[in-house]
Image (cartoon, rainbow, N blue to C red):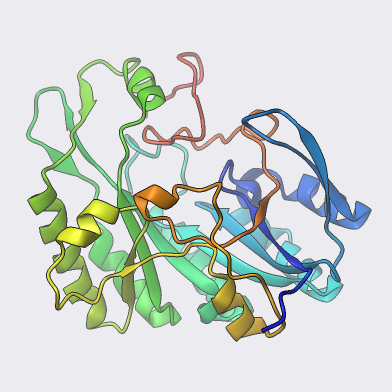
Length: 297
């Protein structure tokens, strides 16, 4: 297959553009370019974003409410863009995700996305799976609403669920230091394997495939008859299957390939610093929330 000169835009791993920055995004689309600052070397580059240069825009979000209310998807479709959605829907938790909308509203958003843009263009991310202790209580997790979300995803026609276990980054430990009595717990490998197998069984009954994101060691430990797959959250081959055309199927070496990331090449146009995320999730690696900004309900 001839490799295309078109690109995939990721909007964005670094922040929640559909929830907070769609006005800015549309302004740049109308200008025909994005100016992106590399978060590591601080170099600025101009990304041409006209419809002839962009194959697919991938939106990542925990709250597609503003995106839907503003009719931004329809505007982009009318301009000639293909759209794909990575929608993170976790259990209700004012502790872990204090500023994310209630679950029932997020599930309604999922229904609208699948209705308006095709369920095959929507990934459901249950991510990350967290274990934690708070005020010396027993170890808790955030799996309590998983079955409810799975049932609604099935009714919406979603066919893919992507998950991972929380990574214990140093900046996360600094953030939770502002919350006395709270600590994250990293469960043993056997526990992780058991949870994934249980999730797979439940999802298979709903014709939803389970994928792991950057869980190389856990994936290796799964039994041989497991149908759990390694995820590519930017799956250029799927974009070509859905939308046609050509794209590069090369791995994105800027992601965590050694940890099992299967993402293919894309250009992320978000910024950690220019576009801060206001969900204030305790486990987030992207948002170095200060002591001042941390709000726990």
